[in-house]
Length: 408
Image (cartoon, rainbow, N blue to C red; front, side):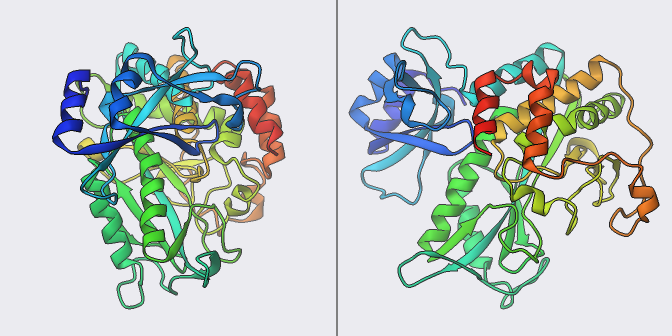
C-alpha cells in the first residue's frame, strides 16, 4: 500500500529500524542494493541516494554514471531474518537521472508503463509465477556442490522429501514480508522444489518474484544449503521453469474474460519467437526446452502440459492462461512487459489462435512435429530474432537489447 513520507518515518521510529536497504535490479533482473542508515531515509525520499551506474552491468559507462534511487514507499518490507533490535527494512526503488527524469534502463519502470497502458485500455490484469528451484548440499567451506539435497520426486513426502522444513521456513518468511503463499511441494527432480505465490497486479508480482528468489537463497544458506534457479542444473533431470500465469479481464470483471482470452493467447503465440531471448536468457535455458514437460513447439491447449500455452482447469478468479516456456533466469519485469504487450497486440489486431492441439507432444510422431513452429534452438538464434523484431524494438530500449546481445 502507498505510504506517505510521514507514515514511513513513523514506522521506522516505532519499529526500531536502524538500516534501510534500497533495492533495484540490473537489466538482467539481478537484485542490487545500497544500505543506508535510517537517519538518511528522509533524504532518500526527498532527493534520492546516488550510486555509480557504470559499475552495474548493462547500465552504462563512466561518462554519465550518477544515478539516484528513490524508494517506492508501497514496497516497504521488514527483512524478518535480521535482528529484531535494530531492524532492517527494504524498499524497491525508482531509478532517476540527476534532473529527476526516469532512467530508461529501469526495467521496473518499463513494466509500470505497460501496466498503466493495460489499465488505460480498460483492462485489469493479474499475474502470478510458479518458480522452481533446486536445493543442493554445500561443501566443508560452504561452497555449492552438485549433490541434490534428496532423491525425492514429484510431491513426495518426508522422509524422502528432505526439503520440507526449508520450504516451510521460506513460506513463513514470505508471509512475514506480506507475500501470500498458495502452496509448496517437492518437484520432479531430486532436490527440486516449488512454492507458488498468489497472483497480484503485474508490478507487485514481478517485485514478489525478485523477493522470492532473495528469500529462497537466504533461507537455504541459513540451513547450510545452496538454492539454484538455473534452468538445467542437472543434465539428466527435470529443468526448472518460471511458469507465468496471466488473467486479463475488463475492469470490474472477475477472472479471465473468455472474449479476450483467444486474442491474448494469439498475440503471445504470434510474438513468442521474438521475445524468447528475454524469457530464456542463458545458454542453459535451451537445454531445458523440449524435455521433462518443458515446451518446445508453439502450440496451445486446455490443460495439456506438453504445450507452450495452456488453459488450466479453473473457474472464476483462478481462471487464467499459463505460459510455460520462461525460466527463472529471466528478468520478470521484462518478461511480464513483453508478454503483456504481445497479448495486447493480439487483442488490438483481433488475432485468433490456431486450433488447440489436444495431443501429447512428447509422444507425437515426427511427421506431425515437423509441421509445427518451434521455439529457437539456441540463445544465439533467439537473440538474432529479437534484434530483427520491430515489436521488441518498439518496447525495449536499444541499450537493453544490446546488453543481452553482448552477454552471449
